[in-house]
Image (cartoon, rainbow, N blue to C red; front, side):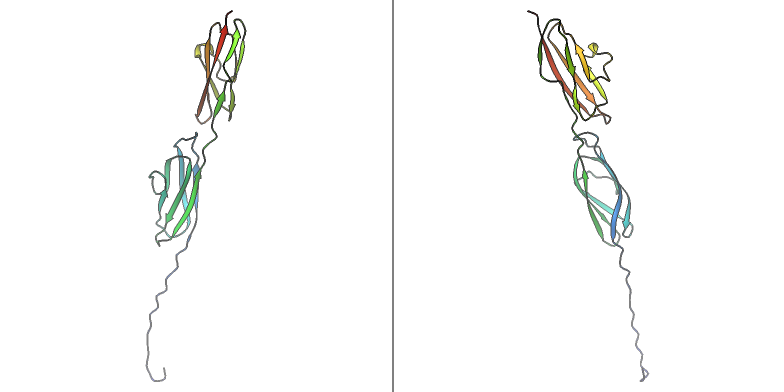
Amino acid sequence: NINGCSDTTHVVVLQLSVPITGLDMALMEPSCPGAGDGELQVNSVLGGTAPFSSVFIGAPTGSIFDFTYLLPGNYTLRVLDAQGCYFDTTIVLLDPLLLTVDLGPDQTIVLGDSVLLEALTGPQPVRYLWAPAELFPDAAESAAQVVRPVENTTYGVTIVNGNGCTASDWVTIFVNTN
């Protein structure tokens, strides 16, 4: 200044951290209703300051960004960065549609009559496993079978979809021999 005095001030400029703005994730729904084989993988964190850590609330312990053996349900994933900033997201693993099959009610027939057994299903199965197996050697692709029992017989079918989920039903055909 004009009196010959001087003063020095030090200023520290802090860089604000970049917030976490999202996650690039891969999600695999459980294969069958109630199955604990869902998966979540975090491929990358968008924004934030590395290194990152995570807390996956309601899920089995996994690696920092790879979670396996997940049941259908809602989960909260919290990702933390080196600056203490966090990002929360809700993960929803849906339960697949229930695989069902219905052979209808038990029936009574007269000896010599035949019966159409029809496996009514949903969603679409891939294979049909009929029982007793020795009566249906080539039935894996057929949703319907014609049977002509000579005595009271219980028939069953198990359907299998592409994920390996199964459903079964049984029906008894009573034979009237009078």
